[in-house]
Length: 120
Image: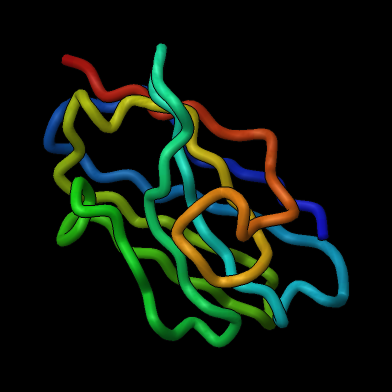
């Protein structure tokens, strides 16, 4: 499975942004997918995950109610819709595929990341 993220950009606090992750590989639809992020000077952290069929979405407390993860297996796309962005959401966002879980060890395939900067 290969993953390519897009959609990251510079936005202002309170703005919305949608990240996309395009997958290749015939086995994509059997894997859970997730978004992680790495802020400057910090460890990479879990953001959101969803299982192979798009069920059981899970979110980090810091983004719950503001971010929504979704997937379209027919199009091999994963999205992260982000609302009410805050400066602390500034990070490189990574798409990942693997077993369903909330930690990096569950995921075997990773994208290269896309930069999101929230600043006025």
